[in-house]
Length: 260
Image (cartoon, rainbow, N blue to C red; front, side, top):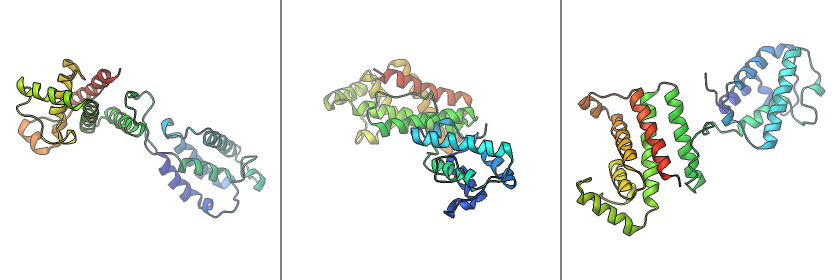
């Protein structure tokens, strides 16, 4: 199904109904039928998660939408007193446009993993949006986008997990993975400068993730590296549905391990 975002519909409204910027009342009549039909059609394609959850905005939008449908279905000329929803001080097209202008163009889809273990709401919602976008890319058959984005989420989650460890515990884990030769040398620089393989090794040593999750995360690491054209040529590998599913599986397994 096509995906339409609120800002696109605002642009269409401005084009179809330039009167919204005039500041004066305007009538909707039989001659506006094509414009109203176009607007009503576009509104059906906006994903529910992008619509405002503010109660006043929701009521304003639903009321305006149903009023507009009634005007279109009747196909009758309206006078000024019927050009707006009763009790409102602006025309119905303006009401709908105002709400859409306040709506985001991106938001996690319903059912996206909550990540409630992350206390920072902005960081949490940013990761949820990335997960939702990766899942949407999978549904659209965009294997490379899914693979790379899901891999980046795994990396961000493991970085966050290691940032919660104390400095002594982190250093002990680093020493252990080098001793066991899981890593050939200690990671260089601060945590933010490590690569994904180092996050996986140390997170497993700290038991932030289990062994099966570490294995899956390493697959996600290898597939994510296919973003580099030279690696694709050397290894003769490409992103496909399998790599996409594997990367998303790594996300879910890491989330499971980090969830208390």
